[in-house]
Amino acid sequence: MSESPLIDTHVDLPQIIRGLGRRPLDVIPDLATRLPGHVDIPKMREGHLGGAFFTVWAPCADQFLDQPYGKDFLGMSEGLRDSLEVLDIIKNMIKQHPDHMQAAHSSADIRAAFASGKIASLIGIEGTHFLGNSLSTVRLFAEMGVRYLTLTHTCHSSFAASSGGGGYMEPSNHGPGLTDFGQELIPELNRLGVMIDLSHTSDQTMKDSIKLSKAPVVWTHAGARAIQDHPRNVPDDVLKLIGDGPGKNPGIILSVFYPVFIGPTPETANVSRVADHIEHVASIVGRTHVGIASDFDGMYAGVHGLEDASKYPNLIVELLARGWNDTEVYNVMGENLMRVMDEVDKVKVRMKDQLPSSAIWEKRPDLPANWGGPEQADLPLEVRDLVNSRLKHDELIFKDQLGII
Ligand SMILES: [Zn+2]
Image 1: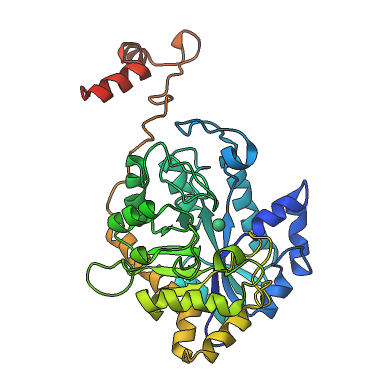
Image 2: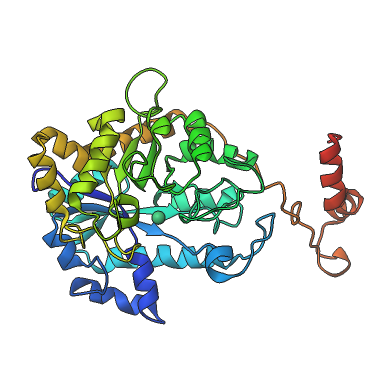
């Protein structure tokens, strides 16, 4: 593990920091000594962690906060504020611990951080329900350094249908997979060089996204459904779409440590069973398309043998004991993921001349914007006349439905 970095693609530490104090930024210094939960700097060091994706997340309002988004996903905008606050926590976390953490965006950055003995620190967004139904926010998050976007959390969004939280999930009102707006999001993420994370999404969202994406897709924290029958795990028919060869998406599935997804029961889930998931996935997609992701600090406990960030070596020992050779182990630790990041970056370069998508969520009632102040006195006269003569939102929607415009 001193030769090649172990990269964990899903660490929910920022959410813990946000929950430990009314002034979350005051918690950041404690990271150097001890934090409650699964992750702090001493644990990451003991576990020889080479790199981590820290996640930006805000709760699904209709499931966790009892504040419905409504059928058109237009309610609750605090999630955008909350997710920006989480991003701010991550940036400050990295800045305040320069002896241990180093910001990274590319595989070259990860290698540079690893060579200087720092934990390469990357950022992912988990969910699209808090993005204000806007591609503008996605573009700006990308500019702020976000490297992956999970298309849903446990709730549906204006972009895509989710697999839910594990129990029965009402189907999305917009269908089983990507919405029309979600179909605009996929090429936009390709263009931005943001990895498309299909963890948490419905099976149809996975299939729709794989069909549309020009770049490799990722599952930043998921298991194999054939090993543990849970909707959060990837089914074999989807795994068959991933790997090397014509018509396949060269993506990666990074295996989670969440006991409920690993099984066979939450009480008996252990490190060996995590390796079973990895080996099953690898038997279909190949050993160059698998990786490691904990979900630390985003679950009540890790499996036996992988209880916190100090325990990664137990999984490496398990894979070596099963006959994985050094190269295969380096690949699963981080080389496979870095190759995927490089391929995603190449697609970004290829698409560099493409303009951003101008798509908007069609249910939004606020565009075109309609505020010119009292008597519309703040609008240039020419604009005021245009605004006054244009169709109102409801008329636009009605004509749209009739196919007139
Ligand atoms: Zn998750």
